[in-house]
Image (tube, rainbow, N blue to C red):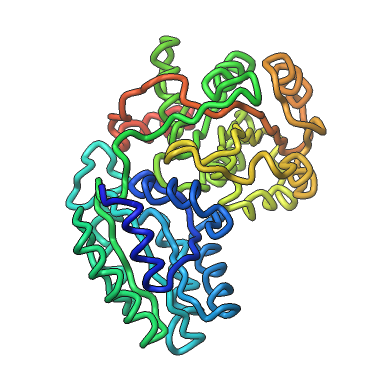
Length: 376
């Protein structure tokens, strides 16, 4: 990994000291350094497009070049503002784009959700006429690249990309930042839900740890996986997939096991229930206030009232978050016969309950099994 102290010194030397983006495990060394050393100049955004907008506002207000960080899977969220706001034919906004390169050369064969994105990462920048450098684990080379990139940004008022392959910006020992703010872990909350929902309930588990924990919970419990959709990619869209299933199968209970960061990333999806009748749809947010799967950086999950937001969007709620197993069971019972889509904010503590192996399963086989189950 690059010396992060040196990285930030070089960025500052070239006039770059404002950072915004969405945390990524390939960038966790960078993200955690910025969070611990420069919290007032590091804005963790809801999504990557949000970060590009914040960066543009910073440039408009200061004239200084900002840096936007993201995983390459989030580039799609950033394309619109990069192409229609930052472009030289519009407002000409310079910024550095630090992009974690998952799926480079199919380096993650057990994670096919990264394969296509890995292939097209450089090409997306090229299509948007954004020059880039692929970083290496070489501090001197980074210094030269930072100077070249900042010079390009200043002279052209355009973005420049820094693509970070695995190991260049990532600490190999990802921290497990546990707290004791709430008694339940994510896995414990998920098991309570499994124990208290109908046996044929369909589950949509959000990107990251929830997919892995549901997968291995099923194995530990000796249960089949034909009722489960694992949203291994497309962060923030597990609830939309679940809603689509619920609308098509009104006789089946459909539960999304969402995360706070994923829910916030595409919060507009919550408004859909205001104009749709889906009483069989239960939206559960397993809320630990963190981007846990990529290093535990804080989200806004514990700072906002997701329950009040959900009520405003048209969901039925129990009026408060569930913080204990007993409260969770009571809430599930109260929402069991809802006349409309329902929502539950489940407060959990940060911290991984234990090491789990990477997900290794046949994605097409898994989705075909779910589709067969839904045809019955």
